[in-house]
Length: 79
Image (tube, rainbow, N blue to C red):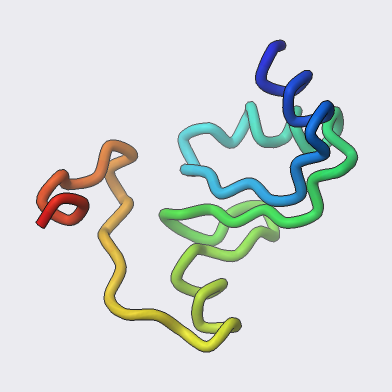
């Protein structure tokens, strides 16, 4: 797949993803060896931290959007 080929080409290190793409992420974990950080934006998943947990480990951040809906709420993005 073109995305994984590109990720391998540029040696992508981190992937932030929504849990609805869990099957694709499992494949990326096998086929993109440069990936070392996986963060699931809506909840902890398969040993990967949620975005909220990951941010808390790194000094925190302001409030974040509810990513339970993979499309989010545009008001959270554009104000």
